[in-house]
Image 1 (tube, rainbow, N blue to C red):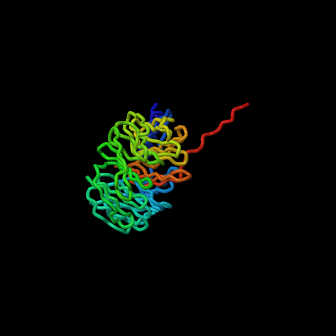
Image 2: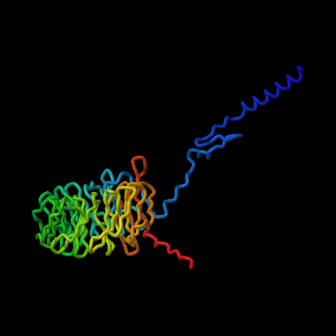
Image 3: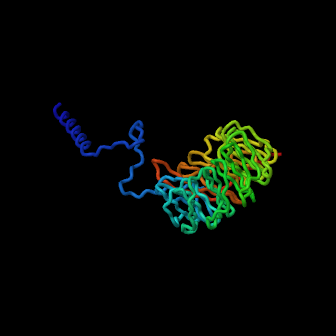
Length: 389
């Protein structure tokens, strides 16, 4: 039937022409074919389209961009947050809103430290004292190569070089005393009129702060770490994988606790317990007086530094974007503080009566770098559930 054949051919030609005139549809990335059709993903934004900036995590008060990778951990001092980053910049940001207020061209070779209204930077074999408010140089002295982190506290600046320990006035950098001393690698601690110094010959020493005269020296079972002085006690981890408590008056060993792992950084306290972390991914709490273990809590990471205690909470930082919170009383989880990116270096923590604030540098080789500052955080109290009668 020639007429019917011509009609069918005409319809087929019309359909083919319509398909040729219609633009081809290609499923976007992530689209999954479904029976009876194709489900397309969200439309891709056109070039130049303004994108909504993601909201920062609720713990973050402000975030400030920095140009390159950090060199040292941030420092919280008074109303400022200070940070050094490549290629050799020290910058001060307002603690209130993150606004940068000044920067100086210095290449720190040690962590930043502060006392009163002065920031101390070790760079180019010299100690530089900068006014925190505006970055002006108050004084500068040659120091040689320091072997341990600079200590600045209570109007003193303590510098350790090979074979020498020197004390200066923080206000003007003038030398008060200088004594021969064994090699020091870890930071010292000031407690009242005493300077407690861990030395690489396996001793912990106490010096008179005003004269530099040695009061006592106690040998421990390895290389001592950074000490924490609480009242009449000195707490510190040692490379023999023990945690020690020494009498601050005469250096006698009060007790020592076998940990079995390398202890990370300095311990902290809430006045009742002493807390420390170790490379077995564990935080431990010991009774101040007896050294008996009260609790231990496992971590899913290796800690970047020693823990900080504030507001009934123990804060522990590690690789990643979170800082773990533990309840000081029993070590149970109190949640975490979340940053927008991975921590590039250990954060600064500033404890107060209501809790703790943190400043952190975040980023990576494939990310932008930022300085973040948190609101005051403290662990919420555990929920009390009333049992039915």
